[in-house]
Image (cartoon, rainbow, N blue to C red; front, side, top):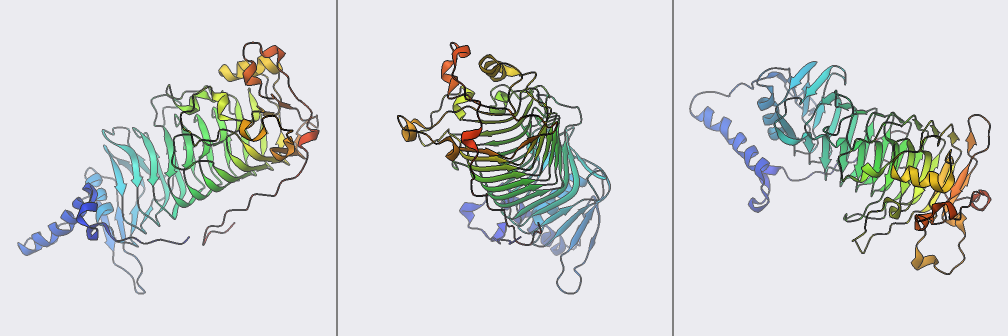
Length: 456
């Protein structure tokens, strides 16, 4: 992946300095003062040793083992690291009481494996994350982050970031008190999350938000409220993942009141999304708290989304739903927000059982309109009145569904609620379209994501 270099923190203009920059500069000066006093260079407590740069300009590798002083030593190294440094965390359980942060470009943080190098935050007292990254060109791989007070691994405005073979877990099982997000890149460009595991998040296990050019592949998400969530993103590919035993398996959302809006150009393919029926344990007021237990795939208010060649089955409420934000019942105060999904392309997926036990308020509403079991695919049918009020609508230009199949060889079921949310007073009289024929056209495929140096 291409790496964008920035000026090191200590060289920034004084008015741009934050606490990390000041601390970094202080730590850089401290060893020189000690040398000047004849005390020599201080040892790095908690470090297993430093491998000097090899010929050819290879990076330094700074190695750490678990120990009582490792938190201070590791955070100091994260502040003092030079671009190109590799921070190696050896096998064992690292106990932390505060969060870690990195603001240096082109640094690698590497463990010995997600089951061997464990960063435990069960006694965390400070920090909103386990690890917080705000620099470009960072690689984080082969470690676990467990039981954080807040989010597990968050990166913010961290372009060209790779998160690989990382497990984030809350080991006590699904609880409202668990951190919101497991793996959490946001406001970034060129994001790769691969071969990761996320368990127990009270919002989303793997979440990428307000970012461009993202790829999530070969990951497993289970026992989260949302297994995998893409929110307000431009250009993304989600494939070869497994989402199971979450409240909702895979969500593609666009929400109001955010700087980046009208998420678009997302492809979701070759995923296994099954048995996502865990009761919703999101804290009260969270948008994912509206997701009914038993949701496979949920697409809300996005544009140009392609869902193909996935296995989607065994969901008590719905295997796949396409809805406007209006169905949440939450007031929209953002005048720029577009709550309607358009150009949603669903094809060549395999659907299993679903819809027998609708959950939550929305599940109860849909069951009142449609009866049970609910269909394999549902569209709420809400369209933009500014575009279509009083005009004849070609639904195939909004929602395209074709060449899907049932794993038992039966007939795929579908419903367009035709805006039946307006019929809540007497939903049994709502007009519903169940014929798939008007949606059987074709849409252009979403372009695959290309990340420099990353093979497909």
